[in-house]
Length: 593
Image (cartoon, rainbow, N blue to C red; front, side):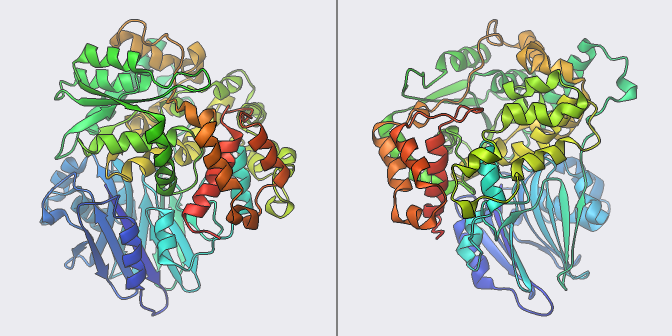
């Protein structure tokens, strides 16, 4: 797990080594164990390293193989690197035990098809010196990020948006369509957009080939079919449960591959509890588990320790409770916002930041339960699509998910900040109308998993854990498990109020009563019910000279929010004030004018 960066200059120019150094310096927290650079003339690469596999200097990056004419920087983990190494050893000489070198040799062997052989999470940049091209690739579920910015005759990339800003020369005007998404879709800005006009994201499951003359082409190399497989037409519900359970067990086992111990972030909910139970089934070394809790506010409890304690006791984990009081939370807010690679207003972002800080003092790798709700229809906004006809998928989803209509945004934003079309509604109608999904819920889960989730829980966990040099692995986003779940009849997923098939598995392996309790969440009540110093923090950001000069929101809207800070977004229930404050705070923290 690391941070990567690069500068590419076309048509005979030289890459800017200073810019690469500034980017890698910004990425130091992602890779606190060392850094390096490589100068290829028209391309320069930078890297920051977090040692997880091959802890020796042999695994340092950029990884260069002069015999093959290849240089590489890599962020992530390839869970099948041992198997690939055995396959490639007959043809190649290896100088390390790292998964990084396996990726490089895989590209040499299979060219752009190398991604089909990788099982894991990855963001890769390969300089093919002989072919005079750069190949960028992102994993199937977008767990590892690649941000890009272009200028005349050149392109830069990095693991985070702030790293690109550190290099300079970025157009930092707000993207109006992205702002529309942020305020409409729970603060999600799907790829390729970001909140800034001058920065984009490489979409998940994409290989981008960049030639020395500036030509570029993309290949989307993976998208599972959300249709029924005729070969599984006679499967019963029990058959599906067994298949899903086996696939999840494999996913958990894969994510034990490391040269350091692997722990679990244990909330006490179904998803993380299943991970602990399946680790126990695997006979894995007793894991360390970690839970976090906060002071209550507004009548809302701030922890679910009673449930995480039950799981920890049942499986004999070495468990730690981390309780955060308001005095610790408030000073952490600017740090957490600064660590966001894009603005994210979900109240649990800061929780993950503080949890990651504490866990990083003990471990470098953890498994986490993110993605289960999106893959297995665990949210309430999935339910309307379960009974909707296929051609009504867009209406079912937008009616239950989108926070605001285009007309409502017109009353919130300054006129020059509002795009002249319903950017979010059009995006979702296009996505939900595509072929390859049999039923309305199939289309909704495809959109949630492959478009929205990547820039919500996935980005949140990557940003906050990597801010502390902690690698988070997400078994529910295993490529084989996701493909199997895509083919699963949607009624099995939507049953029992959502995640029905996972609940059935949970009842088989978890302590009695844990599955059928009310659905919990990762609560940070002080950011849901803003009052006292937290309200002052938001007010200061939204009334600062920078905010007034920027002119994103109508003044009367902000004044009304400050007068009534408990205003809720209608679909997500999140704080409207916090959503606006985080956007402005992030822009201020990044020095965006």
